[in-house]
Image (cartoon, rainbow, N blue to C red; front, side, top):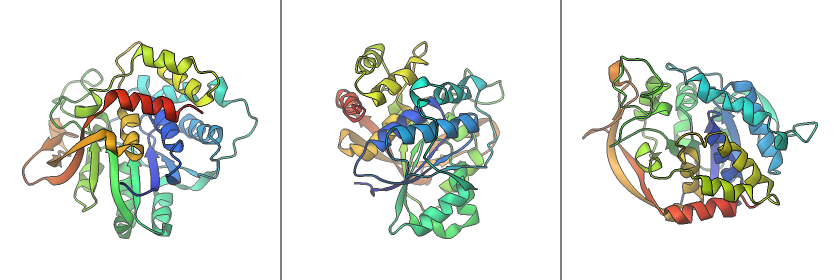
Amino acid sequence: MPSNLVLFDHDGGLDDYLALMLLLSYEHIDLQGVIVTPADCYIRPAVGATRKIIDMMGQSHVPVAESAVRGVNPFPRAFRRSSFHVDHFPILNRREHIDTPLLSETGQQFMVRALRAAPEPVVILETGPLTTIAAALASAPDIAAKIESILWMGGALNVPGNVSHWIDGGQDMSMEWNVYWDPISAHQVWQTDIPIILCPLDITNTVQITSDFVRTLSRRPQYPVSELAAYCYALVMHQDYYCWDVLTTAYLGRPDLFTTKEWEVEIIPEGCSQGRTQVTPGGKRITALESVEKETFFDHLLAQWAR
C-alpha cells in the first residue's frame, strides 16, 4: 500500500480536475499540497479551478502552488482551453471568495519545502509532465530521499503514442503527451533511483468514458461533486475520452483493483522519437499498471463522487 502522505502535481487538463476530485475523496490520504504545472492548460484559470474544487470539497487547508517551469513541445490550444471552461462553471462560482491559499513561492520551491518538512517519505502523484519534479530535484538533490515513489500517468510501452493528430511531421508518433511536453526533464528523472509506478496508455486505452456513465453522474443532483464530474465529461463526449489521470489516482485508493508488471524502460530525450518510453533491456526498472477491474473501478468512482 502506498504512503498516505501525497503531494499532487497536475497540469490543468480536464482529467486533472477529475483526478483532484477523486484524490480529495480519499479519507486515508494526507494531501500535503497541490502544484499546478503550466502544460495542458492556461495557468491562471487552471490554478483558479484547482482552488475552487478544493474549496468545494471542504479541504481549504490544502495549499496550492503555481509552477514556473516551461516545456519543449506545447500542448494544443484545443486541449488547454478547458481550463477556462472549468474555472467558469457556475457550480464552482457560487461563493464570493476562494479560501484555499495560493502560495507565493513557485511550485518547484514548494515541492522542495514540503518534501523536506514531511515526517516520512511522500508519494508524488504526477498527472502531468515530470518537469516540476526535475526542477525541484535539480535545485535540491537531497529531496530524492523523501520521495517514496512517483505515481505517474505517462508513457506508452507497447502501444502507439497519442500525439499523432496534433503535431506536424518530423516525429515518429511513438510518444505520449505528458512525456513529449518535456522529454528532457523526464529523461533526467529517469536517471534517479526514485521508484516509478507508471500508468501508461497501455492500460488507459482500455478504460473509456461512456455516455451511460456520464448520464449516471448527471442524474445525481444531490451530489455536487458528481454533478461537477458530469459537467467536465460533458465537454469531451464528442470524442473518445479515457480515464488517464483518474485511473492513475484510483491506484492510491484501490490498488487491489489493479495488476502490475515490471519493465525495463528508457526515455528518448531527443530526435524524432523524443518522448518515447521504450522498453529496453538494461533500462530503468519501473512498475507499470497493467490491468484493472473496469466495472468495479467505475462503481468506485460513483461511490467516491457521491458527495
